[in-house]
Length: 109
Length: 114
Image 1 (cartoon, rainbow over the protein chains, first blue to last red):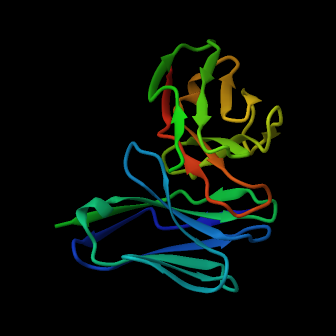
Image 2: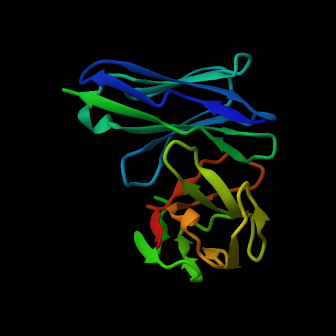
């Protein structure tokens, strides 16, 4: 079966760095997406990785290792507004998105 | 910016009612999707559509149907609502077909079935 695993909840301190991991087992691979979802709001697109390596976008970076079925989202200089759920999703061989359950990130002052 | 608009943020209906959830996107996207989101679970795909008048079943289509009469509009129908369909419903759209384009989401409809 297809499976995406990510931690349920993480806590970090304002100004610090946090890494949210995602491991996957899917039938085929056409890219991995990270989304941010604030409570009661729509998921918003953060990043897309299809090749191995690190993609940097301001305070957010996303890493992919296809051979290990592994990705992480790195958030630097954490701000209170980064408190949200972070969703990992993999596009399979049929170009369907398989979603993880999301990681709730709590930022403390 | 892509705008995906869902007709209601909150909806309360009774068991057995026929329920319509509407979704409109303004970016001329080919692809549209309906998901439900429940605590502790990932987004689960109900139905999707790659073109007008075209629909495909997702992972959990039972108890639902859809309609896409116009490119910009994708409707989700609960034929006879049941309490286990109480959930957050999210509509999304994306460009292209067989292409890794990100999906853009509406704000969701929180549906309660009493």
